[in-house]
Amino acid sequence: MSVTAVPIQPLRKGSLLKLWLGLALLAFAAGAAAWYGTRAFRPIVTESGVKLRVVKEGTGPKITKEDVAAIRYKLHVGSEDSAVIQDSDQGGQPFVTTTDGVYPGFGEGMKMMQQGGRYVLWVPPGQHVQGQIPPGTPFQASDTLVFEIEVMQVAAGMAQQFKMQQQEQMRRQLEQLQPPPGAEGGDDRGSAGRDKGL
Image 1 (tube, rainbow, N blue to C red):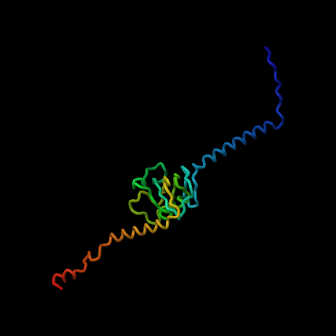
Image 2: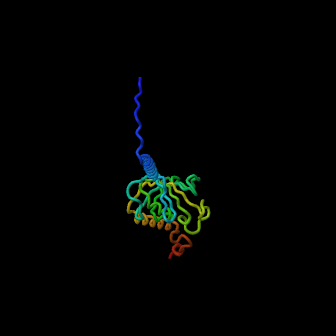
Image 3: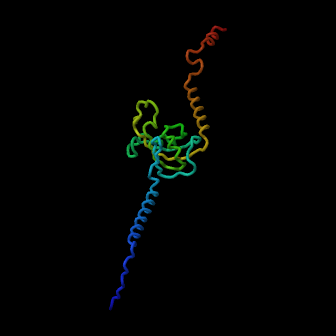
C-alpha cells in the first residue's frame, strides 16, 4: 500500500492577516449580538436618576398622564434582595392610579411602561417622598426605593374622570365625618315650646 503525497502550497502573502481579520470580525459580531440580546436586562436611566429595567415587555402604547393604570407592586428599600416592606396584594386588589397620583419618580417610571409588562423601578432620593417623612415610615429620605411592578391594565384617557371620582368620594367621606345639624348642642326651642304648648 502506498501513500500518495499531496504537495502543500505555501500561503500567499497577506492570507494570514486576512484570516486573523476575519476571526476578529466574527468575534466582534458575536459580541454585538450578545450585547443586543441582553438589552432587556440593562436598565434605562433618566436624567433624574430614576432607573427602569424591563423584565417582560408589555403591549400597546406607553402610559401617559391622561391614563389610569391598575398595577401590582412590591416595595423594597435599597435593592431587590432586601425585604418587601409593602405589597399591593395585601390590599386584595391592584393599586389604581395615574402618573400624577404617585411619587414623582414612580410617575416618571410609569410613563415608560405598557400594559401587561413587568418591571423593576429604582426611585432615588429626592424622587420619592417630598418634604417631611411621616413618623413610622419604613424608609428614610436618603433611601432608594425599589419597586417590582406588573401593569395589569391601562384605561387610556380616563385620568380626568378618575380624579373626579376620587374627589367625589373624598367629599362624601368628609360629609360622613361631620355631625348632622342640631346634633351638638342643637336648638332645643322646638321641644321646649312643645312642652309649654306653644
